[in-house]
Image 1: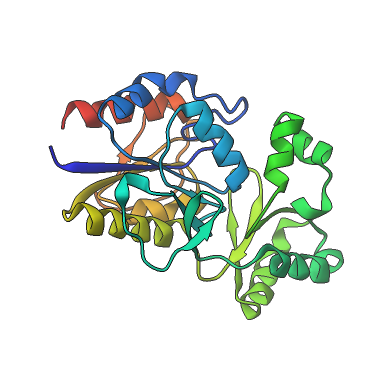
Image 2: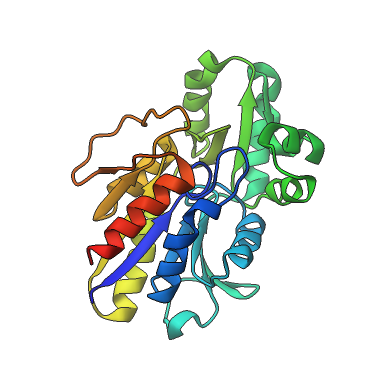
Length: 268
């Protein structure tokens, strides 16, 4: 059987928007494990958050954090040889994003003028309230390495802020709950492309790629793969997107994720 890699967003895609549960996706997750298919998480979440989730999922695969800021391959993953990566803890890491202190400098400089508050300005309790996360998980969400999720008092000022951010080599992307200030040289699509090339180089064969996402910041990833899957939002509406081979899941979050993945695997 040809090699297949599944890339997936988390919030409101594999995980439920309100509860962060992946219970409804368990049949597909078990099938993926049974077939030894790499399931690569691609998220705006932090490394610490993803490490916790990977433990819960019972997998040990590469993952992409903070909107394409860095690709983490577990050390000695499938005996892959990976060029230009940094040894960091037990990972081989390829970094595309800016360092977090640089991003924070920008936020501090413009927060009064634009009425913005980043995760660095919010307490763990405030983040828990905004995200509906338990306190221990909100703490992990605050431990950022490359990007800053933020809220803004007046959404109409975003365009002006984007223009200023550009001069600093930064850009703004929109997630499900927050805007994200990220490095200009990163997005989920670029990170997925690099990860795919690493797999192909080491496996010495072409791979078939699938990606599942629901939001604006997932579009670069969906454009980068052979089979893009768009998950509807909780209200049943879809992000506006027009790309070839697009599959639209019938149901939001993990229920839709599960159905599409099982269908794709049963056809292979």
